[in-house]
Image 1: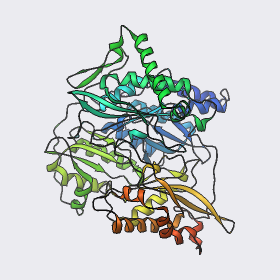
Image 2 (image 1 turned 120 degrees about the vertical axis):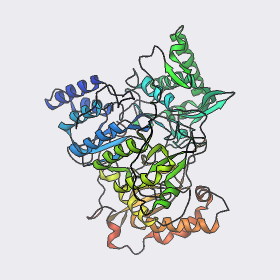
Image 3 (image 1 turned 30 degrees about the horizontal axis):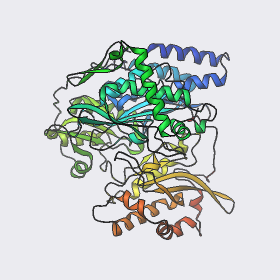
Length: 590
């Protein structure tokens, strides 16, 4: 398959790759293989370039950075090629809108980076102590509810910070999210280091800005920095926060190094004062070129001047002429859960449910063909719940689109329902994971297939780090272990009542510790209790948040205590052998 020119991501999108990254990667890999570069030096370098080690010896994971979650059809085809030629035949969508490939051999990593780069895709700063992928609402630019399209502003921040002087040498990882396009915070902006929600005031575009949110061991919503900041100031805002973090972050203790710990140590008032002072420093440094730092908005599209990068207008949409197909079973159910209104009465946005976040190489290619045939953008957007969105699809073409997705094995209904479970890779590949979170996600998806619990979300992580974002789910599950009769049993910490969507995230409370095999029954009981007792119109997460701990204990006591364990309780889901904890030094904090 011929690859694309390295400077483009297709006929109308600028890519994010740089040939210098590949040259440096090839050089460093060669040095390491010849023994000229120490393992620690190689580790630090490859992490900044998106290459993690796995729990399996000699296996590597390559994370592809997908800024704003935007993928062209041409890029989808290249991702499918990478999956087929160098990985397991599959790619994995993450909760930060990226794509990961597992079980790649170390000598092949340079070839993979080159293939991705030729399609305008980059792995640069996808891992390590770096500015990670800038996530963005997948409906930005298509939502009828948005005050303006946040996508180009997110792209400007990405391009401004990518390969920047501080962007890959921070005390710890740094995350930015843009949302507010659908009347809600659908990207979890409030638990990012910088969260920006689109707003309009007096006819002007701007953002509500929060800083230093986070999950894991210290869960906190970001502190409010601006109720409304003019949209053209986003670059200055991002640079100022990163400068403060670079200066004040803890470089001695990785477990205390995130921006939220800076705020914890300084206090919100002192931190915001330092941030404001840094913005003044930036302005003094850049005068009289201050206008070059800011984004100048012309006809609703931002353009950066004198900053070394371009922001393109969205490509012109092309009229779709899909071929007719016969109606398939399941169309009505799919329409009810996977199709939503967007800007323009003739158009719809379609969520493609991706089970476990996994796409086969054939499905990558099929999605590319489907995007070309049905979407007037010829693109897809990844989501933070591991699905995909096709936008600007004509409503008249929905039945044919459903049939095309069905042919690709991607017509599963239930997007966004309780059975659409989010999960990190867990012990399938991660060094830090305790349990097979993917197995639990598969089990729950099957068990809850016919359960109606609108608005309830389940998220799973294999360890406390929270890659599956389980702390902000109505029902969150965190992998753990206990011993019964001296034998280890896989279990999950059950968190209840978390969520995001409003301006501030809520974090679930630890409510039980359940053996893995008993979790599906526990979830069914909790849903049944909510159905019987929650107030009319009350959200499931609100009911679970106020549910007294004593009620939870009484409801789940027999499952939690496991008084009569069975042989299968000692075997993790997705495993055949007896459960054993196999932890090693992880690289999430490296």
